[in-house]
Length: 434
Ligand SMILES: NC(=O)c1ccc[n+]([C@@H]2O[C@H](COP(=O)([O-])OP(=O)(O)OC[C@H]3O[C@@H](n4cnc5c(N)ncnc54)[C@H](OP(=O)(O)O)[C@@H]3O)[C@@H](O)[C@H]2O)c1
Image 1 (tube, helix red, strand yellow):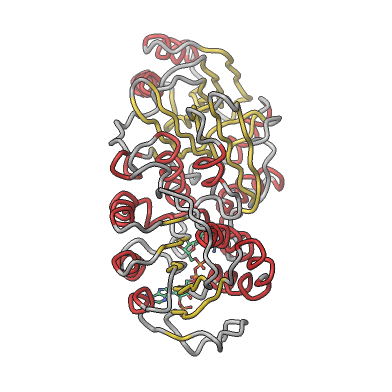
Image 2 (cartoon, helix red, strand yellow; image 1 turned 135 degrees about the vertical axis):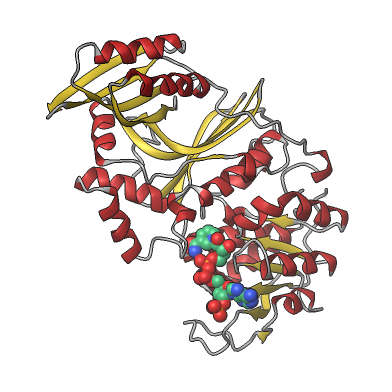
């Protein structure tokens, strides 16, 4: 695709969704009209808007904009050049209206990671065959311009690995558990009361929302079709305050970390709780902030940190995309023509790593030796082992392995139960080298 000089005509936006992000967009368009016009050489205006409830007070002056109760009708309006989709949801209105916008010859800017994680390839193909662009900076890590970094600034690199803490709610929960010494359930409830959780909390704590984002980054980084279904997902619900304390004792923090990398076996995509060194930038990330780490063969490691959600940061990312379109910058959705994106071969945790295993053992002679033997038989060697004080007839044991694949770790864990010395199942967490 090409870069064409910005025209002098106004760029007209149809804004579908007037919630947190939509009103954030309205405010930037209204408050920063002059600076945007100066930067693009043309006015950027909203001509029409859509939401479900026309009577709702939205704390913004919308009187100059036409109202459409049907977002698909908004997408087809003659006075709309760019369809801005900030409604959410991967089926129904968002999908239908986005397709309608492309068919009607409009460019699309969306904040909707779920939509692209599920339909990214089909939408990108449709847009590119219609000569339109789909931009989605706001869909990944809110205000952090990571899509721009990958598709533009780092386009001369082979990307080695992409990592990120991309769900602020999970990072809030994990860091609050650690700083206040509170159990997961208590902090989860706090987060709910603060309004940090999605209506379906599993989208956050189950890793789904962050997994959507990782699958989009992986597509750009590795030139592959979006493969959200192949993301290995594990939420933070099983992380206990004991794990947080024991990890800290050993110099680690627990994060819900997304990692995507291409190995000889295929594309690895994980969104799982991991241990990272406390002294690393990821280890030091507290509260609801996001961090994305990009590794290119020529540039080395780049760390980007910032607000991953909220009206201002998310609308900032939406407007960055709108301004690119106003300037005439036209890029393929995932950084290369959609038809050239390869179907990835999914590889589950093929890259070996050290692992943290916390388990409860019965206080029986030879218990530890049996566990060590089970690990050895599966080809997993032990780097560190600590036994904590007994509680009744049970003791907590912590093992850090040398590098092993998850398949080998799983094979070892399968040998634990028959030893007859283990209580319950062990907690297994990967230690990511960052
Ligand atoms: N909030 C964030 O910080 C954030 C960050 C990054 C990405 N995003 C993404 O941005 C999108 C919007 O998020 P949000 O937080 O702004 O959501 P929100 O506050 O719930 O707002 C959604 C808006 O869409 C409208 N809407 C929903 N279904 C509609 C339909 N069928 N027809 C017309 N309008 C409809 C709603 O109308 P009513 O107001 O009338 O109900 C509302 O105005 C989502 O894809 C989300 O994942 C959000």
